[in-house]
Image (cartoon, rainbow, N blue to C red):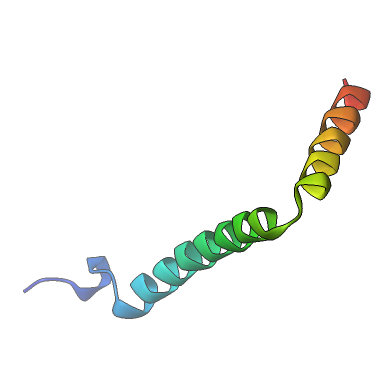
Amino acid sequence: MLSRSNEPTNLNLRYADRDHLQERYKEYRELKRKREMPLSERKAELLNKLHNGNKKK
C-alpha cells in the first residue's frame, strides 16, 4: 500500500499555485501602472532610478 505522506495534497498545490498567481498579478499591476503612466512621469522615474543607483555604488 502506498504511503499518503509522500503524495502532494490538493491543499499544498493550491497554496503553491496561489503564491505563483499572486506574484504574477503583482508583476501585471506594475506593468499596467507603468503603461498607463504619462511618458514624462515614466522618464522621471527612470532618471531617478539611474541617479539613485549611481549613488549606491
